[in-house]
Image (cartoon, rainbow, N blue to C red; front, side, top):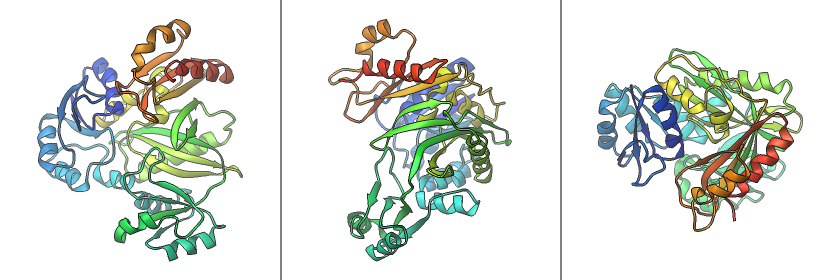
Length: 371
């Protein structure tokens, strides 16, 4: 079995170990030489170029993705050529454009913040007037990890984005007072079977996922609600592979969908060391339409802490001796990237029985890789 992954980032890199274990040949179309996924059989090319992508896909059984930025015309060309693409273009269209995402989620009855499409400052002013004078403006395409997101309180606060947005406009949403952020990951096969991991709590810093606690503490009835919501979204949108549904738990105890990702996701990295079947193995199983694995946790608690920025002038492995000697219980994951402020260069995971203890040990392990 051959799986082609478009994108050479850390998500493709973390698909390599389960691919090796399952005897799956993983091929990667990376953007540049020296990518995180360079450990796999890797070609370098432009994922926006139709001929390049078609040539890459010529001898694989299925194409899947490390990111969601492949243009629609390239995706359609793959399908027209008879290539199995998971998730398919119709599903990825929802993940690629936040305006489309909001409209489709609202159409299927999923709970979302109040939103609108705006094309000028007058429309933003009207939305602000209707929503207490504060809102969140997002660029429909390309934003991630806090990029392309702006909290605004003035009608001219997004003028620079509006000047270049064109007829498509921008997405504006109500500012949601939330208690915390949660994430529900599920995986779905083309034949329709779905498996879900436990609901997790996520901690964001400067718009970037910093920590994940599995399972989400004190979640109560939200566990079943989040799972049912994610399974409904996966089915209604015909998502194949892993789907991450990022959620707000509001101050009054409701769930609202914040974002969707149709691929393995940062909020599921804990599953590599904390679940019977990781999100990366499950994604490979799902896109190949193989039976899905057990998602049960291996310990009562699993905590992942991202290494953001990394040690200046060094890479994570340069500090392994100290980290491994002091924290032998921590599982260390390097993405093979140079350190840079704010960059995700790796993560650590610790499992155990009691949340506060596991959180403390995971943070201590991650601290070895920060200056």
